[in-house]
Image (tube, rainbow, N blue to C red; front, top):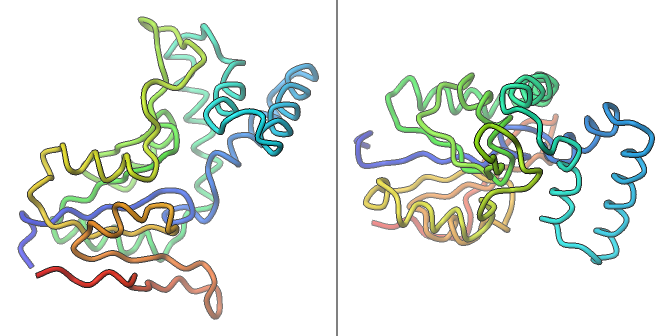
Length: 212
């Protein structure tokens, strides 16, 4: 297979990582927060479970503690959080990515996770590009909110359709059928199963036929 007509895409949460990074971010925030903000986090989680607020509003409430912080200061904060995620790397998936990179395939990560910590993972894995959910900054200060659309579900497919990769065949690895739009669109698509013998990762082809 020629490397210049294929793009390899990986999801991040529960694919490259064995956990949901936002859930870990909530835990991290809780440990770093004052008693008052701990209460606000718990209140937001309860409201989300009751479906009183959207997932996006939950994320904005979790991020609110950092409103008006300098971008440089936040970069260090997210870097320290990223270091805690290294314990959750799936080494089998990392090996697959490394193999593609060594063979000069263009590998990108598309994720609903926040760009501000995902970028450190992307750089470590030496992938070509990271497409993630952005945070909104006013000049160099954080507004406390997500910027634009979250990179979830159909947004992943839409990004590819309107990007420089639109004419390439897509090979996509994800853990979830929530990514069905891109799984269906892909030339080859794989569901990553965390439930297999001896905790060994296996790749399962979806029911999408390989396109010729």
